[in-house]
Length: 559
Image (tube, rainbow, N blue to C red; front, side):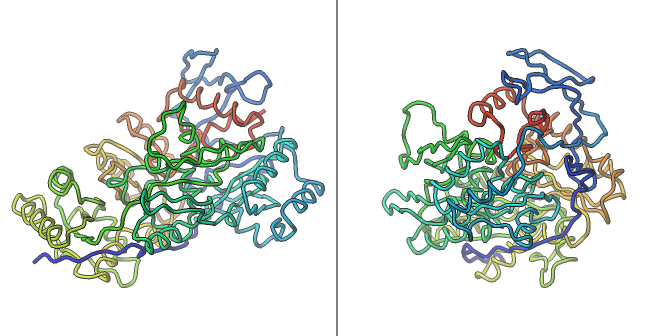
């Protein structure tokens, strides 16, 4: 018998994990070949060289070529097996004592961090896959201080990496070399909240969970919900265009962020902190900074549209025999639960087995083991009607053979245990050993085909599993193995990227490109598009100091 109760927000699991630090052949280069994040792209020439020599206008590679406007030639070798080597841009200056003294003058000594232990943490991503060698972390308290920092760094040509909660998965928030870390964690004030419009204005360093807690007291919720919400900052969320569990209901941050404030490389403060839902006066420039990963400017303030907190939340955990049934169930859920559907997540049996084997106190909520499992969450204002609607939908799906078993959470504890399975997959993967992680967007009908194809390709070498946000076509493809090795990686990459490109998918659905996939951007974006991106980068950051080696191909930052 199916029964239900509400799920309250805030029951997410945070965790840490260990992996290999990428090897560093010498002080001026970085190779990613052992971490599982190797780039199969090797520059043989120049990319996007503009008038002053900072960027390059053409890249020579023996594989393919084509002409693009502004004399651009872009080449991509999809079958290259050599790991890329990132060279430190020799045009960047190195930090000296005068620089440190200046920063202490404007920030105060306690907000200029040179302590080795604190820098060790700031230099390393949370998965311990990427590690920089920065000797300085700055902690500005307001936009003016960020402006002063960047103006000075730009004049000195000191490279900078913006940092928030450092919860990213692609090495975007840590230095590659010795970039100065600018952490906005002290900029954590809620500036205003309008209970009529639901518009929240806050600083970039606000932790997502703290914003959710504040809004809960006002009867509202954040439109964004992530497993890392206890650590991640709203500025980082915006800068990576984070997706999360409820994008199917509330859309992406491109839709919910109404305005922002950002500081460009030369210290200019761009006040785009509007709170209006309609504003067609010229170009909507805020979208340049949403998802650009701090490469165009540092986001310092955000205006975001929040949603009223509704009283009725229900969560169902369902078993399906095959992926086709999952697809049909999604279609039916959109048609029959449309106005209350708030999450539609899926995981395969391999993911379930991994969680059951590696996490204590977790059990399968349904009585039978199946090939796929679905979590359906509804959020509405009429508890009785919503409960009856979800129950009727699931019973009808059972009769149609789309569902083989299912249960609806009775209380908050049961709902939390359901989410623990979905949220705990990443933790279980880290406990299982080495893991190669890929965040892909694909047409829904193609999502599981890549999982099956990769299983056939890898055989017994690894355990391939898929889970993610089925409601918005986002697959988290994970390959678990006993240890990292180049043979396995050579079978995974560039195959995963080629497969995704062939099926017109995106190699980065919600995690960004960072340093991991900067060189792979051509699998999802045309040379003409990347050329325009390079022009925008050149316009806003002529010296290339903001988060270098990220987002755009590494050759863009070489001499």
